[in-house]
Length: 348
Ligand code: CO
Ligand code: CO
Ligand code: CO
Image 1 (cartoon, rainbow, N blue to C red):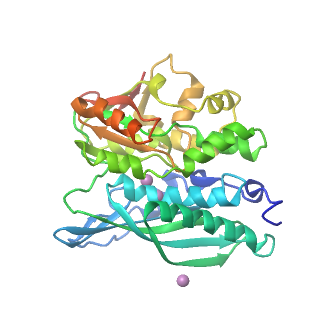
Image 2: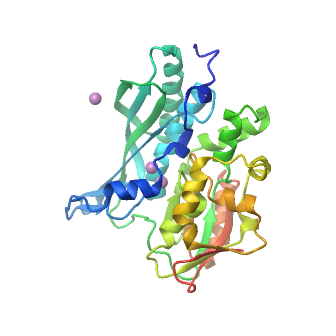
């Protein structure tokens, strides 16, 4: 298969972040293991966060993260862009500035033309350039399926780390990209998605969270994460667990790709959405008027999704205005942090 004839989604089993090992399985693999202890490890594996943070000096820490996955779109160049944007996103979600990256590649050299790999890497390089990130190396293995991503290192001030923790009562929750990329990717793979929706969602997945991250630096933000494989509610649950607070979400305010809603109603839902629901569903109470298709979308595994930002209520409208003025057009307030019920997510 050459770069002209190949449809990448037909060559792989999983798609994008939906190919993640399920959260329950990961927990079972890590639980009870002897994890490293180091006073300079400011954010490590003991509390699931977007990236690890290691203090180098009083005013510098390294932010490190890795993400790679099989293609969720057919076009090799777009896949490279999306994989890079997705990998860089975890540094942005921590409030960091990505600096260097390494390619990580699995490639089916026996069945796929090497020109495909060239386009994938070119897409990744273009996103790194846009992010001001320098490629310093990489590692490639031959495999039965194409997979691509980056290991990224960034800088952050040790006092300005944003984690999933630290929700404050009354905070507003702001989301910066629409939901539904997992269902759209399922439709692309099934040959059901037209050119219009494919292009729109591809562009959104390839969009860096850089502008959103730069804008939020000027606001009283208390916590942040990016929405990827565990879905909107899965990642929100990570913020809510052990927070001592609850969250109220207005389902109708969460931006959703309209086509994804139609496909969800038809039952075109990736397996990852069911995994996410069975892992985090017990933390969520849906009001009876929230349609099953909307519930499914809120658990849909996202690839290169937006940031979910907890910001002081009195600054939330200004943050949304500033995000939109800087090209983050989908930014919207989707809910707020409440005192009760503790550690529950209410979707109305
Ligand atoms: Co993340
Ligand atoms: Co990640
Ligand atoms: Co190597």
